[in-house]
Image 1 (tube, rainbow, N blue to C red):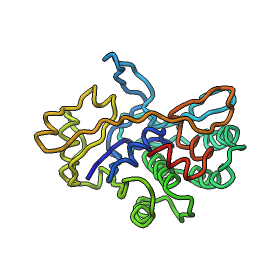
Image 2 (image 1 turned 60 degrees about the vertical axis):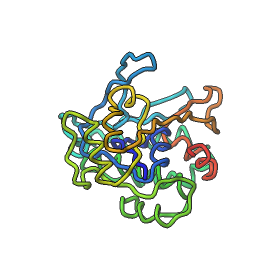
Image 3 (image 1 turned 180 degrees about the horizontal axis):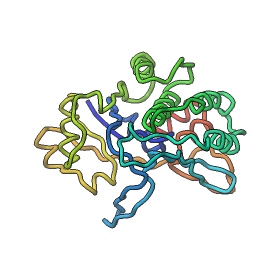
Image 4 (image 1 turned 90 degrees about the horizontal axis):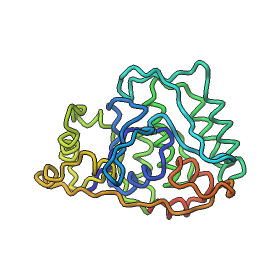
Length: 267
């Protein structure tokens, strides 16, 4: 059994989805602290600060890549305790940008109403909003079939019953595992999650692998660490004069390509 984990992101980027789908169990780290920016480790070992994408998602517009940003009250709280600011109301601007970028995309008229419905609600926290967008993104690379609501229980039921080409069979919230929130050493926390969820493999990204992964600790607990090695293949995008832009928001792939192509890109 293989585990992957991530903080919830606003309409996550494609590498996030690919890592999620390549695991048997996906853990959403909902009780970690919200940060707008964090350090990325570059291939040469140096560090660079950049967007965390917990409240951002990159889409493609006529002039190139554009970030949709969810405004929040940044009070050093967890993701589930960080309020979304709705005054002024940003949702219509996001929907207008999405419509501008993807209104002519092949799957837009089939799926835009779902995105509109997701954003029409007011969420008590950033975590509630972003978890819903993560679940929607997962569903729409699993199936085109209608789903009544994008709740965790509904999506888990869908994963257990729907034939699809990915490993993913279950999604859990870290806050519901019984494993206490991370304090200090992230390696020990991940190991405890692996033990609790009875998995023997853990998928991590290249940045985490370079920054803090303690391979000896995982080996001691008989957990194999797998470093994600996925490069975004090209697929159909809008505004070809801007060139192909890899690893954009899930919205980009989902609106631009039919289901079988989405699945092939993320396998």
